[in-house]
Length: 617
Image 1 (cartoon, rainbow, N blue to C red):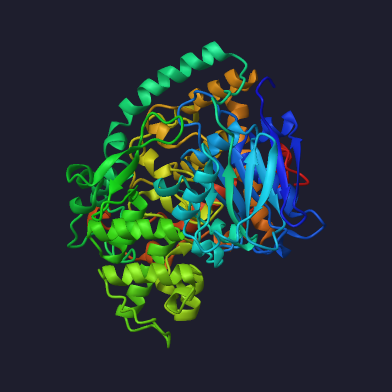
Image 2 (spheres, rainbow, N blue to C red):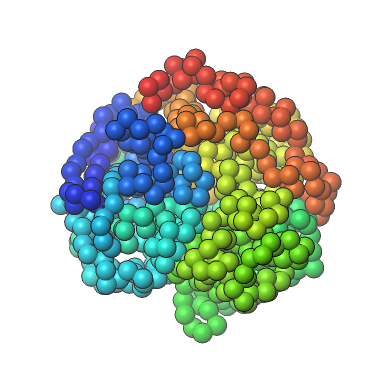
């Protein structure tokens, strides 16, 4: 392998020691990088000491926290600056990973490392500073209690040219919906699954990537001329093909998804309502002057991020599509200023806006139906459309005070305390993102079988029922969103493909910009000197997906957990989704398991594990 890749920095917070190892080329070729190698590292380490997978607790010091970039990070490949964070989730109790853009990954790569494995826990508030010389553990008592923006400012001033991954009060207080915040006020989030609480349990306030001043040496690659030419061509195409994303950001698709019946309205109850959808869209953000400028992740030619100016003059990251939906339509709020304020508050506090907005919507419905059982609402009246309730509940969740201490556990656990489990919209404990399985028929199966719980990004299959194609797997045209043919096949193919994109750490928005599986593979080969073909490439994606499933089955996951909320399965929402319900889930699972080579109970079979070389992991 000609590429310089696999250098791994291990840090033991308890012993305050660190060391460096380089991964074997065989591991990298089989698991590619990013998401795949992080899963391999986690699976290898989580069982060290002889403990069974089901015995590890998310807040156990033995729960490793892993940061990972991809093999193209540090090259000119468009959108290659992303990174991954992985650990056992305190929200779901199963394997967790969160994908992040921004600049932290590239800064970490510039220190010379590709993977960071954080073991054990500190005995006092600490920060980890990574430089070319390795790791240094610093006391962080003075900054403990600060919000994520203050923390980022602190370390940015202390280490010029650095980037900070940090937690806010939610992570310090071990709120299971806490996230890890990157890029300060631009707020690129490792948002899902509660990984900020894992950092908090390790008394780790921040991880600072500090490569030092001066130009950054690019990654050495096998065929630099051919690689650069291909990367330049795609960098030219991406922003043209993804023009809408560049102009209006992810929130620019709100109107189209709302018209399709894809947007959660009133805790997923309705398909449409008397809400000002244009007034909270990406288009309105741009038209009204709220948008100050675009934000570009490192090596991204698209620039879908938003930098907005709030009413008091402050600049910060603008709300994404998911945030607008879960803080907005899901809670029957159509006030753009409220959504922007809630977004900034969640970013400062370090709360996942999808899970937090879902929790607020759940509480509003339970309150409306008079089904809250003896809980103190901390002075909050959670009425539909209440901006005051939304903003106050975010503070309570981060502080774990009053009703917030219940809501910050996520809707699955909150419903056990409050009651009304039928209104708790989640899969495997992870709240649904803002795409409805009643609007795109592949989405339900995708959510039911996603490794981290309800997740649209682990397959992105709904976009292949909208405008994307995957000719490498026989999907030459976008699929009928209300059709039933080949849905299981589509989900398997796209899950494997997204496993590869997450392992290369290429942005999925680049697919809409023209970056195909064939293009991604050509970059990998040009960078490494490998001669990998599409069959081996997609087999690696299948291997990565199966490894995560294999670990989860050891945590007790099986067919019983591959399900959807009753509301999604049985209640017609109307609107653009008309009277559609997801295809019969049992039949879909039967077909999916056969295609996967899993047992009828959803367990990867011995023959499949042997084919993928996963025996013993």
